Image (tube, rainbow, N blue to C red; front, side, top):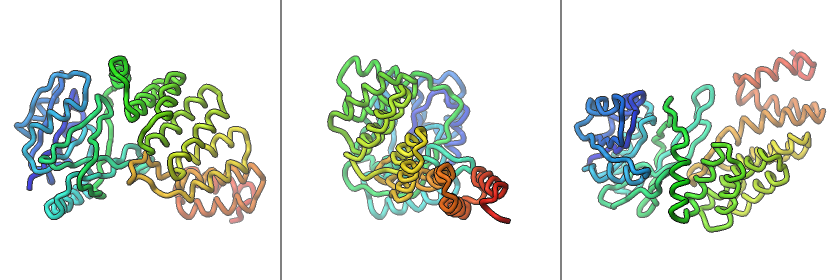
Length: 358
């Protein structure tokens, strides 16, 4: 059994070696498709593989990735971006996964994708992506930007993680421009409307972003994307000073699935803005009860199920003047996150004010 790594690249000389060095131990073939590099990317790629191809860029990520798939010969195809990385401990998990592929012969494998990190390098945002597919099953990417592979067949999940470390390369308005052009040519589906609205939000086009997200929420669509669309819509309305509208957007998410900690923390923040501390505390305590939904494809932020609500509960009860509850939540937070800067600061502050005794 052979595993082929398939990548599309453009001007990635800063990060390409880091990525390829991290996957050498568990891949048999490397296929790199260059979409128009003007730096040393192709030379670096040639140091790792003779399977380097050119593809004329047509503002379509799926087309480029499908071309990379078409050049691979492995039994299974793994896709990565140049600014992704597999840590040594996860490389060992990939080696174990190879044995599982041989034994179970799945059609598709989902892996956790860590896309943001805290000060200690721990994942702060994680979601599962379709990462490995059987070549003979004929999988293809869809979507000109924020492309994906529609799942089907026998699907398994693994804990071999991929880390998205990013690069210094400026993305600019590339994705937004692709969406604008695409939307001018045809009606976008629910998933693409979601990502289009998110791109508009990232570019601070709040009115336009809200309109696109509202359109997406009115139609059919994957419940995970709808829940996240509600969160982004709330940000847009918040930027427009529409507090009630922001709250409505967040509570609308309850129509689509079990409450998420990210949503509940945002509701709590809205009440904090109004200094409605008891309501804020209620929603933060509720966030602590939420499950991890990363395996469903959620844009999971583990800090919203632990650190964030615990710290904010200390603040809320201190603002209320409830010394017992303030002390209770501070001590719980200190036991779990003793070295976090905010916890250390709170410890010193409460000792100076007499809430805590030496």
